[in-house]
Each structure stands twice: as C-alpha cells, then as structure tokens.
Image (cartoon, rainbow over all chains, first blue to last red; front, side, top):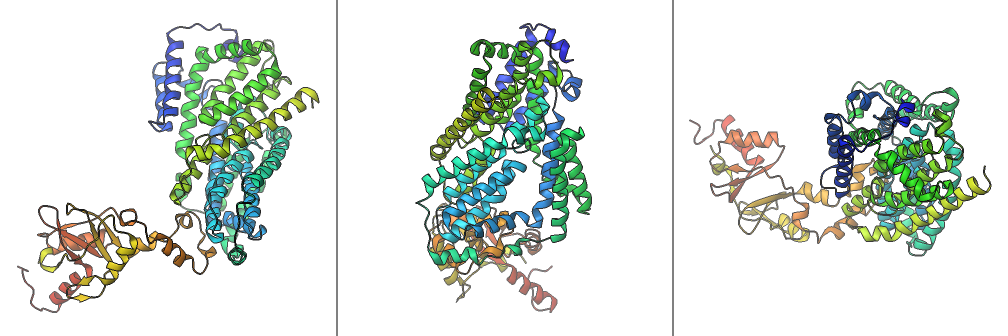
Amino acid sequence: MTHESTSQPFVMDTAFWTATAIFLLAYATIISEKVHKTIIAVFGAGLILIFKILHQHEAFHVEEFGIDWNVIFLLVSMMIIINLMKPTGVFEYIAIKSAKWGKGDPFRILAIFAVVTAVLSAFLDNVTTVLLITPVTLLIADALEVDPIPYLISCALASNIGGTATLVGDPPNIMIASKARLDFMAFIYHLTPVVIVIMVFYIFALKLIWGRRLITRDELKQRIMAMDEREAIKDPVMLKKSLIVLAIVLTGFVFHGMLHLQPATVALFGAGLLLLLSKTHEPHHILAEVEWPTIFFFMGLFIIVGGVVKVGLIKWLSIKMLELTQGNLFATSMVVMWFSAFASAVVDNIPYVATMNPLIIDMARQLWPNLSGVHLLQHPDLMPLWWSLALGACLGGNGTAIGASANVIVVGMSEKAGRKISFMKFMAYGMPIMIMTVAVSTIYVWLRYYVLKI
Amino acid sequence: MRARDLMIPLQEYLRPDNTLKEAVNLLRMAKRGEERVGVKGLPVIDEKGRIVGMLSMRDILRAVFPFYLSMMELGDFTWDGMVEAIAKRSSNRLVKDVMSRVVITIHEDAPLMECVDHIIKHNIKRLPVIDKDGRVVGMLYERDIFFAITKAMLDEDTRGTE
C-alpha cells in the first residue's frame, strides 16, 4: 500500500479539490467555534466518504488513510482506568498531601502543585489532571485567603509541560508515536530530559512572577495543616487494585517495545483487568464517562486528514516545505518546532498534528525514496523532526487561553469561581512561558541532535 | 377543592435585582397568613408581574456552597468559619443569580390532585398559583394540602368534594 501511493504521481483533479475544500472548510469552522468541533469532524468525515474520496474500507481499515485505532483505544482505555480510580479518593489524597508538604506557604504550595500536576499529566491526559487538581487549588486558595488565579494558570501551564514528557501524556505524542512507530521508552529517552529542564526554568519563572505576591497569615496556614489527607481515601480495597493495575500498565508501557505489544494493547488490557477487579455490575456509568466527544473528534479528523493524504494535498505541502528549507533538516526541525508552537497556540493541536504527521512522512519519502517502514519512519536524520513536532505542538498549547483543552477548563473554572481570566490576561502569562519553553527546546534539539549527535 | 381555595394570597415576593441580604431579611420576616413567622421560600416576580424564579432555603445554601466542593470529595477538608465567611462575601449577590429558574406553577382553577401531582413529581414544598393572565395570585403549601387531607380523613367539613 505504502509503496504504491508513493510512486503514484498525484493530479489536481476533482477529487483533489473536493477533499481540499472539505478539509479547509472543516478546519475553518473548527477555528471559528460556530459549531461544536466534534460535529464538524464527524460531518466532514461523512462528506469524505459520501464523495468517495476514501472508500469505507480505507477509512476504517487502512492504516495510512483511516482511523488510527491505536490512538482511539489508548485514549479510551486510559479514561476507563482513571474513571475507575477517581472514586477511591486517591487524587484528593495526593492533592491534600501536596498542600501539606508546602507547610501552608502559598508559594511553596503553588510550586509543589505545579510539579505534581506536571507529573500526573505525564501519565494521565491533561484535562483529567486539571479537573483533579484545580478543585483542590481553589479550596487551598480559599483556606489561605489568597488569589486563586495564579494557582489556576500555573496548573494549566504545568499540565501542558508535563504532558510533553511521555508517549501517553498528550494526544500529539500518542499520535506521533503511532504514526512513527515509536515506543514509550523512546519518548522517555528523548523528551523527558528536556521537560525536566523546562520544569526547572518554569518554577523559577513562577517564583519571579508570583513569588512575592502570595502572602498569607500564620493562623490561616493552620487550616491546611489541620487537614487529614487519610480521610480522603474512600475505598482502600479498590485503591489497592487500581494501584496494582496502574503498576502493570506502566510496566507494560516501559517494556512494550521489547514485548512487541502496542501501547493501546497494554492500556486495553489494564482497563479490562480493572473493570473485572472492580466487580461492578453496572459498567454503564464508567463507560458513559469516557469523553466520547473527544474520541469522535479524533475519528472524524483521521478520516478527513486521510482524504487529503490520499488526494496528494499533504504530499504537495511537504514538497513546498522542503523547497522552503532547501532540504536542510536542521532548518526544517526549527521551522516545524516554532511553527507548531504558534499554530498550536491558536488552533487545537490535535487536528494540527493529525495533518503534520503524514506531511513529515511524505517529506521523508522525498528524501529517502528507497526506504520504507521503520527504516524510513525512524531514519536517524528524521528523528529530530518528530521530537521538534512533539515539543512545538505540546508546549505551544500554553500560548493562549484556547491553545489547549486544559486552559479552556481552567478559564471556565475561574469564571465559575467569580474570578474571570480574560483572553489577554491568560496570554500575558502563557505566551512568555511558551516562548521560554520552546526556546529551551530549541537549544536542546540543536545541542543534542546537531552538535553532540547523541 | 381547587388550588384557589387552599392557597394563601400573595403578600410578599422578591425582585430579581434584590440582593441576597434583602432576600434573607424578607424570608425571615415574611408573613404567612396573619402571623409573621418567616417562610422558607418566596417567588421572584419581575416588574411585569410574571414569575421568573423561586428562591428557597436550599438556594441560599447553594449560594454559599463553593462549586469546587461538588467536583470532588472535599467535604472532609473544610474548616470552621468557612460558611460564615462565604455568607458575608455573598450577601451582595443578586437574587436572579442564585434563584431556581425552573418554576412549576399551578393554575388557580386546578383541582387539588393536580397540585399533589406536581408536589410529588417535582419534589417541591410550595407552588405558586397563577391566574389566567399568568400573574401570581397566591402560594399553595404542601402543609396546607396535608391539612385538607387530614380533614377529609377525619370526615370534617370538606367543600366541593362532589
């Protein structure tokens, strides 16, 4: 399949223009937010199929053009595991414990929450993490009688940074891993180190921005210290089962490359096992709480992007991109990283990465026409491009209030708490942090892959 | 017996732009029949005489309950004085932001069973009674229906049963 489509020259025929029009209209409507993005994605996918841009078989069963079931099952399975874990009270326990580590000091708590959020985000999806952490940050801010806004914004930014660190942390990474057939440890080896460095810079930045402004009285600190985190645990038996399953899943992720198992296989096994162990007779609620709109958004997008891949739009774009950077891969990496960052700050990074993945693969095909499979996808000269895409697309989400779902959630929560964060206010913090983190990533990619070559 | 026969004619009500402070004061001082005993809920009526909401004790409780507490199990981590502090902060909030907007009303000519039907199905304690122009003319309380039922059971004088 792969070989045939590379050798076929594309023509700008009716199918080409139909698919391109559907793609552009869909993306424009998603950006305008006039209609819910999931509806656009599903309707756009319907159009791609009804106009026979893709045959149904291609949309459902062909890896190159259709739905990436790896991504779908990994997301669904992780959501099921989290939904089963939530009622145990473990997340409340972690959050209260963190606040007490901070000894009631407002800035220490802010910094600890940023680190805890980043670590949780590396393993759970960012929206889930933010939904688990922010209620506690609001409680803590009320207890200390300090402004909740620094806690909310720093939590959203930290979740986007932390999510960059691993394969499962953020949807762009899940998508890149699946397309480039990269395993969990590759992300740990290539992205986690730079994310740790970024976190150090980030905490310093937080100290500069809010360090002196957060003050409280000693008697209010007692409110935090009087909390007993052990009261949070509602179901110790289920908690033990969840932790065992989580340990199995994480071990599975670490070794999935060696075991020749896909990450989705590992996660699906974990979800099935925990459902079984939970002894629930009503899986209905657990399954209903899966974020189906997100899942269907992915499925629709995969089909729309599959359509423009098949007609050759993406290949045409990749040729233009190589012309622009004249085949210099360092320049291409930098363009990909910075363009991805600013693009992800304004548009959803999921459709963006869904489009960029095939573009990078088409570019690789122009560069190394004789290679295929893993040799092509993981060509040593291509690897920095994947990492640049991941870093740009994930960290770019911090740029604006609409750059990442976690930001949207936090802004919504803040408004509900009676403390509106305006678009400009979010950007005043998010954009400098985004630029700083992408700058650190630029130095990292340049130093590691083009100077030290390790 | 119909809604009109059991209702207490409308005496006190709230405006959407009243503050919670004004509202709780009225709730505490409101008359019920001839006595000034305080009530647990009042209708919210706009300047055109239309009912736009109900403000009850439960709505006041909700107004001081931070939304984040319901998102997770955080009730164990609250402190003494929290309710009072939020109550002070909330005293200038407006009735229209706190009231229940879904209001079940009953027509003044409705038979008593229709009232019972609403009270049971919607789990409410009081029903605003409206006339044919949609204006609120009175309030019908669960307690008064209960007294009507006891009278019937005890074979006391009941009008309009046939």
